[in-house]
Image 1 (cartoon, rainbow, N blue to C red):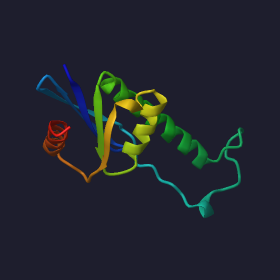
Image 2 (cartoon, rainbow, N blue to C red):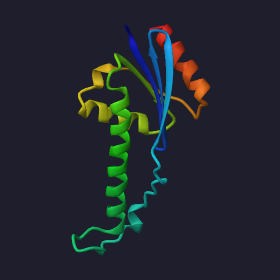
Image 3 (cartoon, rainbow, N blue to C red):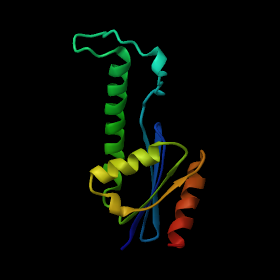
Amino acid sequence: MKNEVGLWVDHRKAVIVKLEDKKETIQIILSTMEKHTRFSTGSHSDTPNDVNGSTAEDIRDRQYNLHLGRYYSEIAFNIREADSIMLFGPGEAKVEFAAFLKKEKLENKIAKIDTVDKMTDRQISAKVHDFFIHV
């Protein structure tokens, strides 16, 4: 019984396509995260905004990273049982998630990491099926 997973991921949405004994299930996880704005080094204030010496930007970055960690944890929980994982997506999230899987000792399950543009759920499903048929 093979348990293959395709995961299209960006910072706002993850589409998990599970293929198990020719049966497909699709699960969508939303991050509910606002777009993260990074400021250039010139706009970074050296004046601390709180008692710990952190600027407002530092606090936003920590909150963003905490939220991202929870989002990646939820995704990892849902694909932990996979024998093989195909990661793909348009931006940095797929690489960040691969690093997250490495910390979770699951990197050996990654079969492929691919950069693709935005896709519909149907296109994602077709890509996953096509990949695992040819593996």
